Image (cartoon, rainbow, N blue to C red; front, side, top):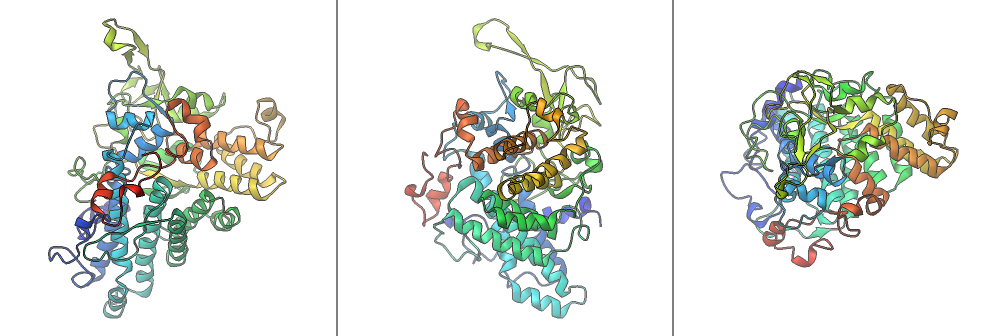
Length: 515
């Protein structure tokens, strides 16, 4: 079955209202208008709707439909905006690190994750219903039950990974919330423990890569994410064990840009992504975090598109990171004089100092090509259906290079994984005279780490990787202080003030440091 079609049931899944975050006003489960294990999960189709509903929160504006890419790309300064009057204030605050606990999109991020978590909890706490369905229906087998549980475990693990990596300590909820009250914060370490438990279970329950529909979680996706979670905690032996099970199960797409076009987005490199399709977007402006309604397109193309809103554009520092002759540069960015579906690229200029009464135009030099629809149409039209590739095999190879740099003093494996990624781009190998002369030696651990940093930035540009990488490496202050980043504060988002106000188990003393 084509996943582009079955996504419709994710949006129309009946579980759109069962749970929200840990706000006390949404914990009430006795509302007769809300679904419960007693009134749902009565058939295989209802079980599938329950699973599909968990995916729906990925498509909210709080996550991949809008704010996720702005937050990560702006904070990591893959994006720039200098003198761009188009950029809205809440997106500008990411670039300048001026957001606070009242920031609406950060609340939407938090709420989107907890809505998804609680939808997963609904299914995972309904095992008697699932077992009854196995006994009653011939078309719902033990394997179907395991798969439903595996998808819920994977998605709960992913939502909690977003929470733990972006907020640190936070409420840890694994049950259907009781009537009233709230949940106090749990340590980040406890959340990571839960994520590891969920992903390990998911890997045992999910089908192998290639045996599931595109966009749905697989065993490979669970193991890749598990390796990433261990890497974020510098648990290198555990990360290695997970990644070693992924290695060789996927291959890099022959063409780098195939990962960012709709026609080729389900290729051998994609381990897991967030699906979008031309199935309706009536909820595009009102689905901040609840996952209700049709939200099958993302604003990414419109927001970043040079022939549309052009709210942000690639930073000069990012463009300069690419080596001369690297084909990924031309596949990641547009430059003046390039061609697109609308003709020849001519980037607009903006007034350098618009308040001085004098026109001082500044010519924009580059724009995003990655994830843009300009290869097939002149305008984005607010309706991009290109998937977000959350886990690519290239990312896994680069994470493996990092893990082996910590565990294999010889450096051979690290260099090998880096060169696998460069092979696809047709770039010279690390460890050669050519690369040594170009300023990229890999003789020492420190030199290999510099190569890893370089390769991750160019390969994963505009894929929401740079900021979390800098934070986990302890380099965010060095790289981002010029933009307003403050150490021991901006590594995490503030807990939304609305959450503190409505969750009886939290007070202002639970707020993250600096906010």
